Image 1 (cartoon, one colour):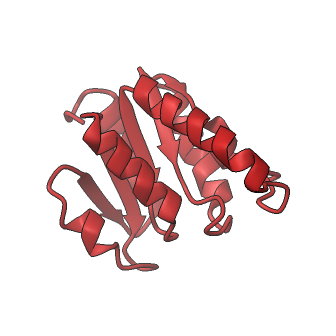
Image 2 (cartoon, rainbow, N blue to C red):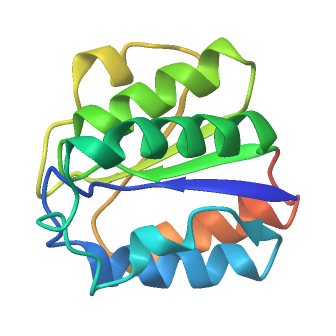
Amino acid sequence: MKIYFAGSIRGGRQDAALYRRIIARCREYGTVLTEHVGDPSLSVLEQGKAQDGAIYRQDTAWIREADLLVCEATNPSLGVGYELCYAEHRGIPCLVFYNRARCQLSAMIQGDPYFRIFPYEREEELFGTLAALLSGKEAP
């Protein structure tokens, strides 16, 4: 299975360590096309407009290649919202996780019946649900 992991980059990197742990769990079940999202050394300052087109082309190509999109949406991100919409438009299943104690998920995501939404309070909940979904015990 090819998994596209989506998490905030330019919107804020405070959850990068969590992204890295989610990506590691996803790797147990398939290939993660976007492992760089969990890299704590990824610097948004080094990115510039010259790279934006290349990033867009690469990310949308990865989404088209993916069998599943998994996202952690606690930290609001325009890019993650766009990626979700792009995947929905192509019929790619989307699993959306967010920490209910830290945010209120956007109505545009929460209200879209296409997305499978999984609020959590503790990481153990997130990882338990993710493992059940990825192992086939619960259909993604």
